[in-house]
Image (cartoon, rainbow, N blue to C red):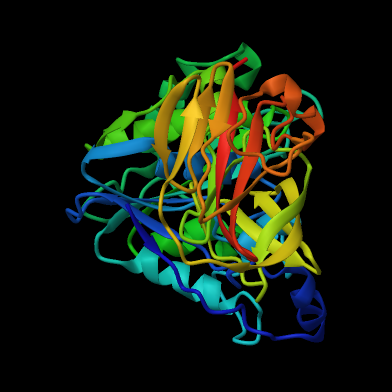
Length: 440
């Protein structure tokens, strides 16, 4: 997996953007999109794009799962899970207008000019042969009017092509491919209302709005391009389910093979989205599991220079600084707010000894340790230890067996009351953190 990370700031093109910037910059000053390249580059690449509109989480979460939960064993897949990352964070269709209407003409003064130009270059790359742009649309597309939510004016639950075919060496039979994808999805529906249809917009026959779209730009570059729409009437994880069904069929058509780390059903997708997400900080001195993290974490050790160096398990995860609070964002969901306790940081990366259920273990900073009944932090002359939330009548918190019930639940990192912080300090500097997870 390769991340293409352009870490420059968004260009400051307007007074509005200048006003918003201090409130919304991520902790590493980066809202540029990621390009993740998976598999073996072979001149037959599938380019998957999510997040062109920030209020369509089914699309960008599907692309994100493709990066984190799929292994490409044959062929090549490029994934952009967060094309309009600022729009995703803002939970907006487009703070600077609809990005999917900026692919025909665009002023260099537009705040999104650099983003649009960059994704155009990836679309035009010689290796890219097929492009899928993921969307969530309103209602349920039907070829004939049924009611307000089921009509030709709705966009949900359809596979979109701009025209029937294009004259290119590979995958030019657009409507036939779209029909194959629709058939595959419809063989795996959750309920019958979710049925998919092919939606040919016949863009070149005079649809001036669709002429500005990403897929129409792509086919004019000689690339097979499709839109995949899931209905906004569905819960997010079910939208993701339908997007992944379609993506797996596109991969099959292209001869791309893969392994998936979860069961492709409604429950499996829900767990894949919400479990096993984390952020590690400061060269992994701290690792935060995020699936059930509390809304607010107080007195969190942040470097005094206020720079937050982090790595995320998922390209939709970021941290945004506002005053002395660091907001952990997952797509357009705010997971938690870290209230900064500014500290000098020690460069020590040594391991420490903790006794877990009577057995002594060597533990690295940033570890999460499962505990059945109790743990005991071994005395170490180098460190001062603080088990957050635990109190006793002694001056030290080492050499004492500590059980779950002896730490008030409000001090846990997670809402289930199972994960607690053990912090290590050398004199007045923060050295690292170990997390204790009591089994329930």
